[in-house]
Image (tube, rainbow, N blue to C red; front, top):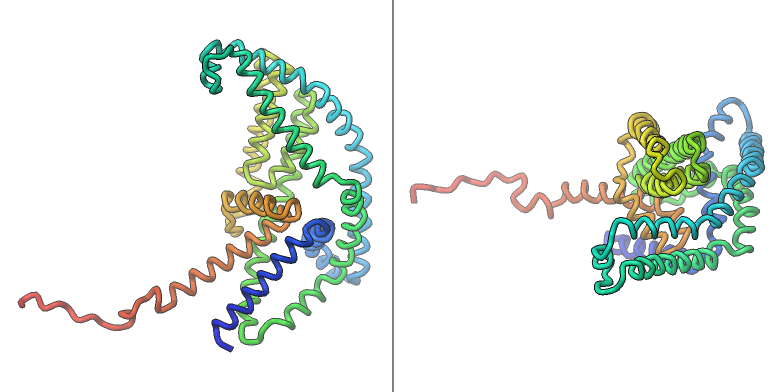
Length: 365
């Protein structure tokens, strides 16, 4: 089979995969989430097997432990988070009014021109600007509610995901062996080498980044609660979760936390400084200890590439795309490096003069 024909077959396979993903994106979320959980827990199952447990016993033990942890977390955290979320929704209009008053004190007529409403009163300009922001926020929440928080989808995620994760974790090694047996013999070693490199990148980033998010979420939630910020728990947990996207979680958490601190403490700059200090401590620990030890340089995923992949796939395929973004980004990165290495060995890069000594020019003529 010629290289061109093989390329056509692989291109058709990839096109069919993308088309299937697009058509089935509405039902794929629990299955993709279950696969992600199984991939994350597979090394733990292998470790338990090395201690003499069967795969079924190891999978059952892991499932029971994580279900118990999830139940405890739900019992302990959900009531507190619910109460804080309700309080945050209730205080949001007052927060917007406080922000409007603060803008009025710093702007006078110049603020109206800055907001692009020249010739109108600054108060009207601020109201129009904030009104547009509120409309945008309502539209976003409505979109999320119509797409991601449907009752059936939520129930399927809660019920189906643990079942899928259990069976995939149980059969993970056998599935890998079956896929390996289907590899084209001429390219099997190359594909295995690329797959190992992709797995190394994913293991380094995803498993490491999950631990980073848990530690940062704990630092932010506990720290903001201890310094007295009213909604510190929910802000810290959300900032920790979003920290899966490099820098975004910390930036968003810092902006929201600072706004809430200014609203709650006003001109008490000691308290506001303590809120800022919590995020500074979290970033110091993350930058000097967590990321170097848990993620490291072997990941080879640039933060900009990670952010672009997550946003792009989320825009195309919704939350399912966000879950698939990192594996696909890692695979594309490995394949791109492989392609560049092959190109540098090819005649296209080396040129027709490679390996041939070019005689010097006769300068006397």
